[in-house]
Image (tube, rainbow, N blue to C red; front, side):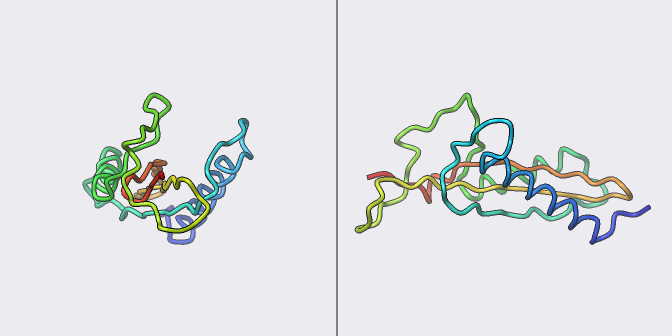
Length: 127
């Protein structure tokens, strides 16, 4: 059985739904995720010679290109992480920008998927 486009899309929709539920507090723990839009960045499907590490490599490249870093409980945000200029107007005192980066591949009936929640310093600001 081959992993067709419809099957890949069904997996992606299921994963995005699950991640959205977790980020919105529908999981086992209450979420403290900010109420900002979640951007998704797609990595291309890996080639024939690529292994599971290739997905991780693609994600690292995407994070580096966006100057983002993965969320980690061990690494708290610092004021210096907020690098964007605040807008001249508005009631907000800060903006935390984040994105979900993902990569996938399908080989035969095997679907492999990776997703990372990351902080985006160049789009985050504090007054």
